[in-house]
Image 1 (cartoon, rainbow, N blue to C red):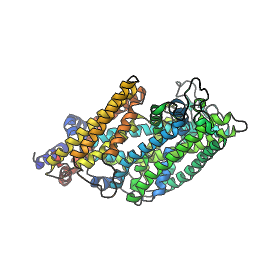
Image 2 (spheres, rainbow, N blue to C red; image 1 turned 60 degrees about the vertical axis):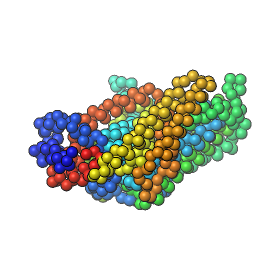
Image 3 (cartoon, helix red, strand yellow; image 1 turned 180 degrees about the vertical axis):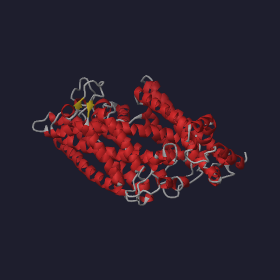
Image 4 (tube, rainbow, N blue to C red; image 1 turned 90 degrees about the horizontal axis):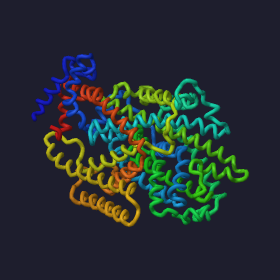
Length: 608
């Protein structure tokens, strides 16, 4: 089809309003016309991918003032540590040791840390090559298009808000533990007449959220300094607990159960299966490094600071977690560990050591503050860049001229989180991440492969070549994902025995064969200019496999929540976002005389 005709069509679609971002919403009649064109607009916008240079120039300019580049690699390491090492690790460690891995939990944490590093590599390649604040949303937008990016980004923001509200309410309980007060009954205000789960007003949680919101609105650099201080003190608490465990522990507990009649002994009491199940359980304790990628636009030297910051934080957290697992395993036999309070439970049973539980409460409180601050920094930058794309109101994308931070997005999400935390008891555990986060990790790993082997949105006249490269890559992504899903279903539901081992081995061999064949037969379309994922495509394939495996281990309510959120997001996209995006990207371009539309079409010659 002739591009001039397409530009003409775009101009016809703009309507008498003359283009601009408000043409579809200037009145009921205009909105009715826009709804009537929904199928056509979906066809044009849903798979429209933005070129990376546009994300870093034209799209970023919609925020007005640029964010200040004030962060260095040590700031990113601190943010990564603060985001990952929350209070939930105290629960995760005990549950995984008691139920799955026993003392072998040390190896489980090492395996999970390696897997987290593989996923972090995928984020790092994008963040170095395209240092913008959108994180996974921007990465998916330049590869799989607008709808995939909006679906995953909106799910991620909703789950940030819900989990942050839950974490803030838990701060009240942990702070009470630190000072020896039953905080839920003393510091929360009951409201008669409201339904159960909504009748406890938590002003402490609201105060914490509002205070952190003011902090992150004021300055990213100052927020990083606060995070570094709190994280340093929190890590000191953890090191103290580790040392106490080694000093008061017994190395014989590493191989001796408390009840040898009913529980197996040894360092790996449940064998390799227990170690890998434990790794799947504790992997969720590494979630948080993804928020660091949203700070890429505020890093002084992205090519050096981002790889060091993201990878360095994952390595340091892995070392801390392995030491915590070893310390706890020495304190008690694995079958005597309290899965809900492993460290405080161990010390309460010792004469004169009950005070250590107060120390653990203080450390957990600091962990909650740091993880909450990093999450709130990340969620605001996700929403800011989503606002730049035109699929949500543009005022959310504005960067304040004085503070150089996304004040509107930060304040909006802070108030929403505070409102939820005020009344609502949210059953989101501190050590669990929802299905949306794992789904984003899965999508980013696939996006790295797609971009390496297909390339960026193609220039005019090369659409056929682009499609020729795209289909083999999409076939590989689909086939490998199905193999990973088959392995996961076999692991979860197949009866144990030799037959299960054979089927799992065959499925794993098939996965290896598919990756090897893809590497041998399909050449890479682009090479990263500065930093790239090593071992392409093996590293992102391993990340995809892991995330599919973890997605399969989540419970049914997680999928129900994800389905509900996704349906709501699709509805918003069809009724509002696709029209706002069309006005911003194509209607406005046509109103400018067609030059912008021509540029846009040139970037998407593969779609013409």
